[in-house]
Structures are given as structure tokens and as C-alpha cells.
Length: 311
Image (cartoon, rainbow, N blue to C red; front, side, top):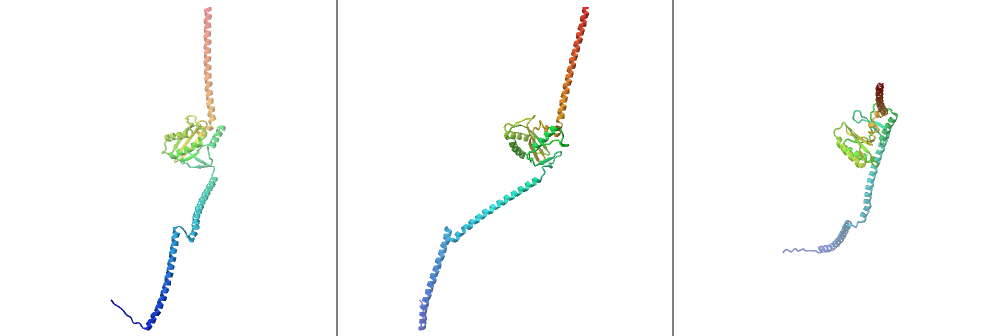
């Protein structure tokens, strides 16, 4: 055990007394600093509590002020989406107007290459070309004048589609529903396939018969005198189809030359039948005359015999 001793003089004692005072002052300062530190510590704890409260659900005033800003951000997003939709609609309307203007400048009848020899396809702005073709043929029948030099047939087309079996069946189904909606008719199916080897006529006809009868149960197939004909022309990769009336009866398969000469042919047939009837009448009359002459001869011979016997 070691003990240390110090000798202190009066000056050192005064210094020590002053030092006690200084220490006391220092202690008071340290107490004040401790109180300030405790106060700062309490302030930091209150701040942490406030932060915990903001996290727990009771927002402070600063965070309350952020709520409308977030709502305004959502409103701005909705406004931007509405602006985009409005812009898209405006672009669509502009495109539709441009297309309408293009169609306005198009010709009413315009030739289109169909890719087959001896065949011309004419595009028109009419909704249904059947009434026009029927009116033309009625005029030819009435006036008996051939309006065209090199055109043999004029067949109206109500719908076009790609030359695939599924597409053709869908097009016929849609067209038959609108055509046979109000009335039933006897029908015939006429299919022509040119420059295409992927389609089979028999399978198409069976499916078309079923579709037409499904459209109206009173529809019946007719081979000789049908009221309407489903005409289907397949040229390369395009199918042209339509329901055309009186194809086999009145309009002679829409043959313009035959329609122009229809009355001539009728007159010729009538003349031929009359000639045949006249020849038959002449032969009958000659036979009667022969019989009469024979009878008169027999009568004269019998009279002569009677005279001879009497004498």
C-alpha cells in the first residue's frame, strides 16, 4: 500500500480555495449543460414520437398538406388519359373523312384487273348492282337491241372475299341471312372456279344448301326453274358471289346477246311450229281427197256393173 503526501503552502491553499470556487462554478456549469443536454434529449425524443405518430396514422400538418397534391396528381393522370383518348378519336375521324373524300373522287364505275382472260371486273360505288343489271336486261328484252359489241354476260356481284372455303362459307352465310330474311324462294347454286385448284365444288355446294335452308326453312332447291340463283365465281385467289334472280328462266343466264335475239328466236320457233302445222294440215287434206277420189271410183265401177247386169 502506497500513500502519497503533498505539502501545501498558503498560496497553494488560496489557490485551492479559489480552485474550490472554480470547481464549484465548473460544477454549476456542468449542471447547466447537463440540463440543456437533457432538454435537447427530451426535444429529440418528442421529435421521434412525432415521427412515430406520423407513421402510425395521425399525420402532422406538413403531411396533411401533401394529400391534395397527391390527389391532384391522380387527377392529372386521368386528364392525360382522357386527352390521349380524345386525340385518338380525332385521328380516327380525320382518317374517315380522308377516306370519304377519296371515295368521292373515285369514278362511279371503274375497271379492276382480276387476273383471268376474257373476264373484266368493274368496281362501282353502288350498294347493290343487281337492280342496275336487271334494268339493263329488261331494256334489251323490250327494245331487242344489242347494246354491247364484245360483252357476252353481265353478272352482278354483291360480295367479295378471299378464295378460301371458310371465308366463302362465312360470306354466303351473312349474305343469305339478309336476303332470305323476309321471304322464301326456290334456289339453285351455280359455281365456277377458274385458275384455282384448292377448292372442291361438291363440298361447297352441300355446305351452301345447308346454309340457305338454315336461313329460311321454306327454301327449297330447284334445278329447272329456280326463282333465285346463288352465283359463285372463283378467279385465282378472289371469290365473287351474289344472289341473282331469274337466272335460268327470263334472263337466259344473263347472256346479253341471247336476250337481244330472244324475240327473233321466239318468232322463228313460232314460224317453224306454224309451218309444221300447215304441212300437217296439207297432208291430212290430201289424204282425205285421195280417199274421196277412191270412193268415187268405186262408186262408178259399181254403177257400171249394175248397168251391165240390168242390160
